[in-house]
Amino acid sequence: MIRRGDLAGVFPAVFPLVPGVDAAGVIDAVGEAVTDFTIGDEVFGITPAGSYAQYALMPAPVAKPAALSWETAAALPTVGETAFRALKHLNLTPGQTLLIHGAAGSVGAIAVRLAAARGITVVGTAGTGDLERVTALGATAVPYGPGWPERVRAAAPLGVDAVLDTSGAGVLPDSVDLAGGPDRVITIADMNAAQHGVRFTGMDPADRAPEALPELAALAATGKLRVEIWRTYPLKEAAQAQDDIDNRRNRGKVILLP
Image (cartoon, rainbow, N blue to C red; front, side, top):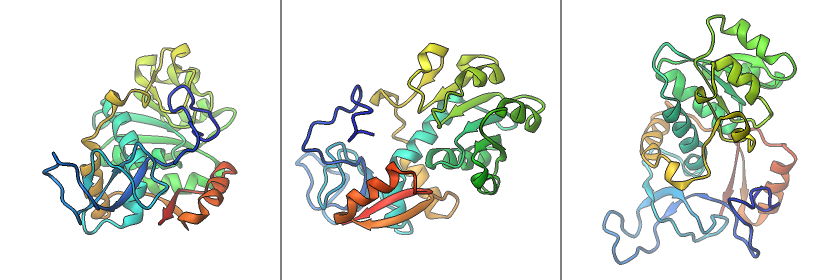
């Protein structure tokens, strides 16, 4: 999306461009003021200067647990922090019900697992081919498409307390109606959020939840959290990886191996 210019208002693409924001690797050098990490430490996190590379700059690395695979560490930062942050903003309590649009996606799947682990009842919309997977994640699966609000009401007869939209598929008006107001709906994907009084999260760096990554890494290292990885590619096949994503061939995260 950055490469095509879809996010030019937030992430302008100035070519030549090194894509990628997530990375995992071994520290090769540290700045003069760095005291928490040293050369040789295994870390993961966000790389604002691009991660499609053998070397990348990481301003705020997180220690990689030994039991966490390199692939999972590289797949976790953006989707994990996004799911964690959205649930933090919605501030649900055990026993409440959350509707997640796009529950089979990378962010949606993590949000389902985190919410279910906190005692929150989850209803998740997904395509017919992903309904079994959403159920296995811990949610009541509902097919998306025309008529989805009625199917959600049938799946949650007592109503839903909040909605997380990860799909950007024009579901906000009905979601506001289901949740009882725009303050109980949050989206990470619909740029028309403001038209519906809904909060869009992800634009402002100050809105992020950096405390998420150590907790998520610990959960993933112990098997309590799983990031779906579809395929790995050597770095030289990055163009093919992007083509597969553009054409929606992937079912999960795509990883480049330098």
